[in-house]
Length: 115
Length: 117
Image 1 (cartoon, each protein chain N blue to C red):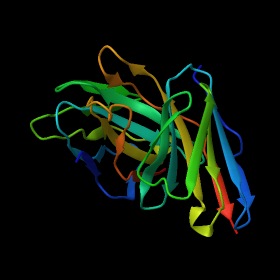
Image 2 (image 1 turned 180 degrees about the horizontal axis):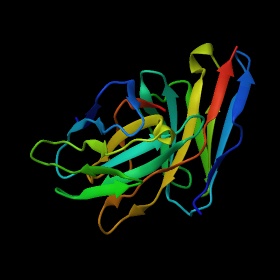
Image 3 (image 1 turned 120 degrees about the vertical axis):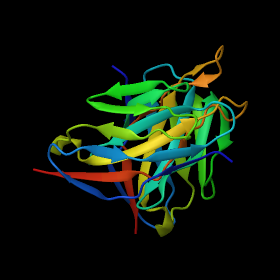
Image 4 (image 1 turned 45 degrees about the horizontal axis):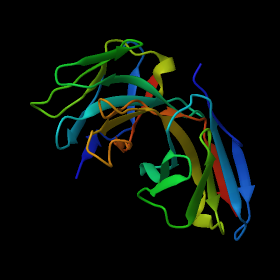
């Protein structure tokens, strides 16, 4: 079945460091891919998305490129801030009948950024 | 602005009590979801609904039921709460663009942290 695998945390970085959080997926057809972020004490919010191969999603300095050849959607940011400390979730949805309402989630990666 | 609200941020209940968690969205979304979030287990789907009075089981429906009498409101019911149901509960909603068959992003409420003692 469809699945998402993301790197385990916690990830601890110093401010202004480069961030990569790996996400790979298994899916039939052509999934849409998402990164969500959960700040402490809050619900999840969409960070970025990509709906077809080679699309690049970007928001708040974060980027991720939909790579069909490697079935990956890695999250990157060139210079993290303390305010980026959060849990990051990779997710996908596929447009198969009956399943296109649900998201398949990774387990989340906790990021802590130290000043 | 998009809004999903949940009735309580924190809730403490006793074992055996009947518990209602309410979720309301103001975006006229067709789909609504209930998840629970536990450390190391990520988000697990309990139930979802794609229309009024329609519901489907998610991955972990045991011990839960749901109700959707109005499009904007989706309730999660714990018929007889147990300590194993202590968790963070998240509600979400989304719309479905039928022509393309693609579900757009889910919008989440702030969560209800339920403790069952």
